[in-house]
Length: 372
Image (cartoon, rainbow, N blue to C red; front, side, top):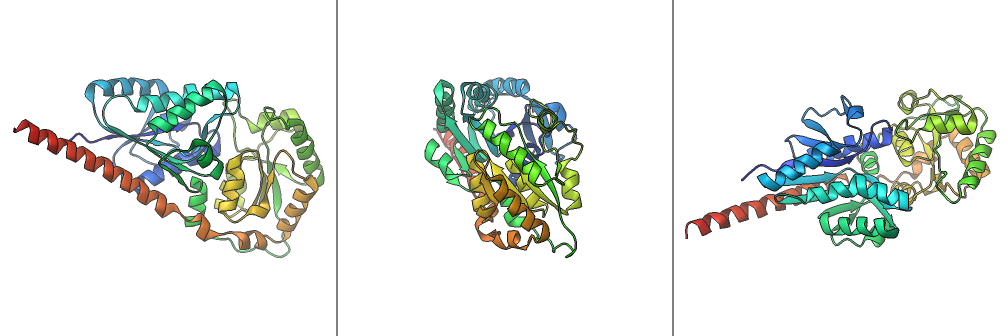
């Protein structure tokens, strides 16, 4: 029996630290499931991943290289196991978003089914909405071609209605539940610094309200600074900060979290989750379903607000209390609810074992038929 190839699909770009972290955690989950052979990582920004992943047994390939590899599998019939990076990229909220997702990600789902036997497992996702023709096509591709997928919010479960969907937390939520060491309180006379991680939401219907509210929040916390969680590929925090606030931001999230004496107010979910994982409390201004689900899984519902309708005064007051005493934040943290990492790993192991057993059974049947 041929050893199956292992692929990790949909790696976006480490220029967004949250997306980069999800690729690392996806690889970690694959390794935790005792898969030791080389993993081919399909990258939309291959150059940016060079030297980024701390796993020596990985191969970086571009989308065209993956397409060529998929066509070759039609001839070789080599079996393969495909994993989808955890994230929220399978969506079609607008026509533009839907067609981009279909081209960049739907094509990978389709290509994974070419050639020999395969098993497709998608790590914790938020999927949808599936509006328009592109959304309908994308939803059909997922339902028909992804064998098992983990979903990180209830709305995704309801909207997709996939027969092998499992509700579980975001990969970073699972990492927090398994590994977070709640930090000691800072000195009583120390006030934590505040850092904002904002992003452009101009595509949202509530964009103007959002802009007014974050402007007011900046006014209410005048000593706060800004931090960069994403740069490049048309999704740059620094470009938004320059255009909206007239500032040039040099603070990288990694540096902010390394110092530790901070409160992060982030519109980006993984800006908040990265902070919590590093032992830094974070208030999240959520613009998608995934944010409320993640904070609920962590038991931190009091620290998430809707980006389109939050009260700047209420958020500033919550931040002010945390600056002096982060104890209530950590007291709210629900490790039992978040710690489902072993469940994820065991399910992956079961899927791989099932794939191997089916392959062995087919080989045995073919051998017996050949001896008749």
